[in-house]
Image (cartoon, rainbow, N blue to C red):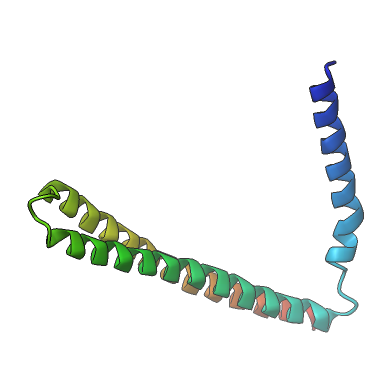
Length: 124
């Protein structure tokens, strides 16, 4: 076995062991049933913020792409019309992705609410 391969195995072993050692301390088991629902509520808020942030990034990028396309359109002679059309299509595609991400966030939030209600029902 060459030295590079031994190093890769050693790295994988250390990484795996550290995951096993630190996982219980990073995500401790809930002490009581109320903690479970609180943790699920926190998880719901975090996932919603992440997805909405991604959706906003799509929209912001689409706006910047549209603005750039408009600025370039002022120089019609030096920028091919096909390039401007392609930029606008890309901007629209990013807007569509942002809209879908927002809908996904809502669907995920609804599903998480449902899960929390089920867990609360089981814990009663």
